[in-house]
Length: 186
Image 1 (cartoon, rainbow, N blue to C red):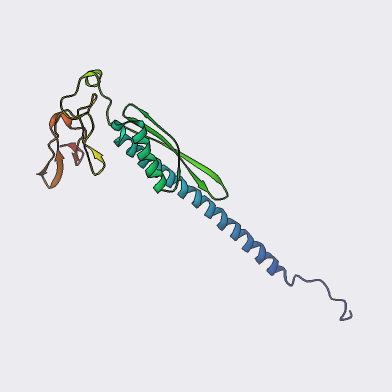
Image 2 (cartoon, one colour):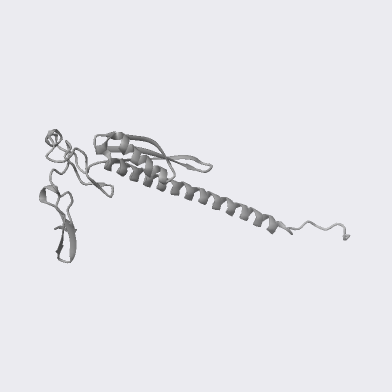
């Protein structure tokens, strides 16, 4: 055999295989980044929808325009877009949109309102006291004299210590939650 006629060998094949492996790893990494970006955007959109619905529900007594203005303010600060805001009585429903670069839009919806439905008797009774507008302290409404008000009298909140834990105590007619200690109601 002359030196000019070499037999074919697999020299350099490892370089080609290594290039394919690196390309596959880069594609997997890119896919994982896209999935992470979508998941992050989804969580942010859900958070914005929840917060804007709570803001709208808190300002619901002032009307839909004011309530939805508060929802829009929250969504704008979170750098998203408010597609829809509706008030149905005391219940706020919002829809928020965010963009994922190169992938499109993600939509999130949220609803916020009172914990329990009011009875027809509560809805039809007149106001007890107040100016007809809810009082607000640091953005939290604490009730008013409006028709359909949940709490018709000032709420007395006291700190009580019992058996090593602290709980907020409301008058019996206003309690909405049960505190448990080791699985039994307290």
